[in-house]
Length: 254
Length: 58
Image 1 (cartoon, rainbow over the protein chains, first blue to last red):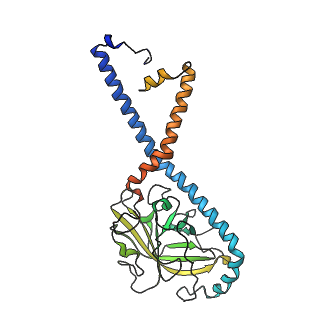
Image 2: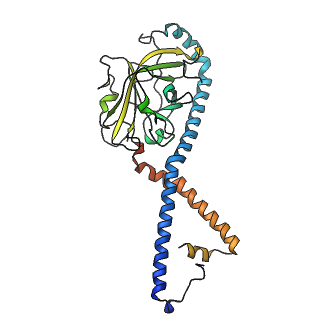
Image 3: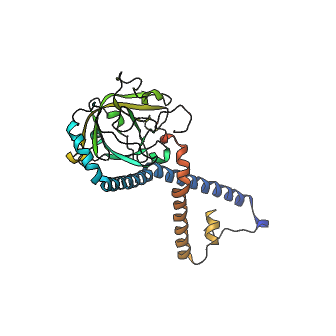
């Protein structure tokens, strides 16, 4: 019906001009509405699809690299297994530094569900956080003395830390490095704090229950769920390590 | 706008409908592939780290 509407300009009447105006406004509104709906679908659904795909890719690459280095890592890990029950001992295993942007560990949080697993990448660049969790590059290495700090999305990009407020003292956060499982137990949080509160990732985190140096873990995400005015933080302490050959601890079936 | 596009598409109504569908899909693809990834960081969901407010690692 629109295709038939093309009056010559000299015969244009006021109601025709009005019709053109109304139609143009309607079309613009419809277009804007469709754009908004599409954008919401993108943010809520498509970023999750992309993030899941990227996380799976990262973990496949990680497992390939572990499989490639396993023959050398296995004999080295064996003597450590004997000392494994003493996590505070100086001989406890530690992960080496990793190049930025590379996934180097898997994180399991039983509280988030038995199937919850995410890769941990080196660095907290927003591009990296689209693929998994990000390790603050300036903080301690996995398993080392200091504060191994990890950030993750609360919402969008797969909602990895959606259930962050459900974490309680005593919950376990399990990380798998190249040849070792690290079990951290939550001792403090979730604490709501300000984005500028960088002390929470200090080697002995400020506001945490810890007072002396140790092997700590800090997780951060945003709060409120869809906002960015605050951050949620939990702190955990290394309570056990075991070599990969012994199989994973409870709650990490894979 | 849409009327103008429709009038300028070639062929009969079926061909025009098919071309319109292809155009719509192309627009959605460009939006999801280029426009939305650019616009998404402007929203606050990326701010999950603590920093000195420098914006280096939002």
